[in-house]
Length: 255
Image 1 (spheres, rainbow, N blue to C red):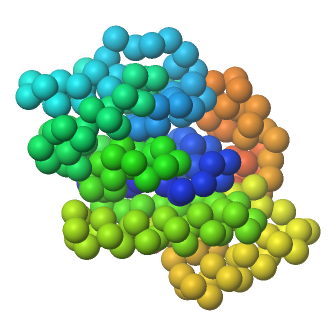
Image 2 (cartoon, rainbow, N blue to C red; image 1 turned 120 degrees about the horizontal axis):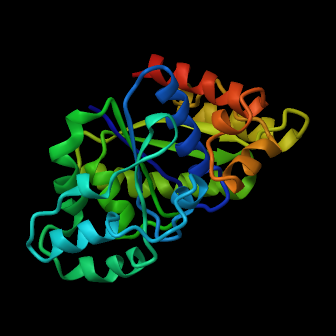
């Protein structure tokens, strides 16, 4: 089943928030979801209440794969709210960027790890680091699609254009099946002229790849992450919950 990287070359664009809450919204429709935290900052893991350093995490399994042992990513899966499955990150994952350089087939390590479980889930989401390093390249090489969340501001817009350059190179050299699923605007305020202008420019460049659904600015989304929960388990009545529910419906239509 599809593997989707959630990625953009710019911090603060709602990447982790979108990965968590889109996955949670899809889980509520009966889909079986796996979230993989591929960011050494471990924001996704911490935002879902995984504060400890798990004995098994993405780094421990990458380490086995690099050492020529059989990685078993199933050992790292944690089951949390409403049955949502998560492979947590680790601060040690930062070292994997350098360690991967000495490995043959270094761009396919994550792909090899995911392959045995890919049919166990309806969707696998990979929350990528903000930088285009080997962890992000591994995620994109393992993926069928990339989903790009961004704020309707100038710098995130520039980040998309830069990211798409790397996206095209990876698709050409490493993963010909990789496709752009779409771009979703986050922290959106229709009263802000810049937000509307960026949306228009995105549509001019990417057409129907721009999701019609926008994620409105909503403090409850930040509070949910602080509480270690997705928005549905934190405040089902919040605008953030209805926005991600609508995004999930549009997501399923696109696929």
